[in-house]
Image (cartoon, rainbow, N blue to C red):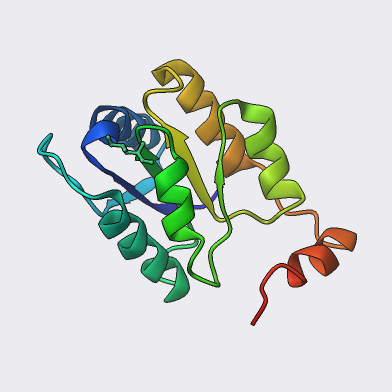
Length: 145
Ligand code: RB5
């Protein structure tokens, strides 16, 4: 399992983010929190871009982003060429996103899934490995530039 991961949320995802960070800490994973840290209304792209830049800069290998639906975070994070962000609402997609798509950012909707399911999704994402081979050929075709 990756030892240090980034995590961030907007106000809508704050509570779930803190629950996930607590769970990961229990598992011995080092979590770097990029904010937000209060329930004040804020803009999800600010946090998605901060995390995506850290992935691009190889400061972190993988990250979790939480907003209301996970959608806004994923759209913003995917503007970065080194990022393959996926929104997942169940563990199988998270596992397959690692195995087949080499996804490096997991986005979760706090208004979509409960904490227990979110933990299962995160565990699936962090324990599955990219299978390479034919999938590497396909992943290499994703970016346009
Ligand atoms: C905030 O209300 C909400 O729009 C945001 O958390 C997210 O769901 C956007 O995609």
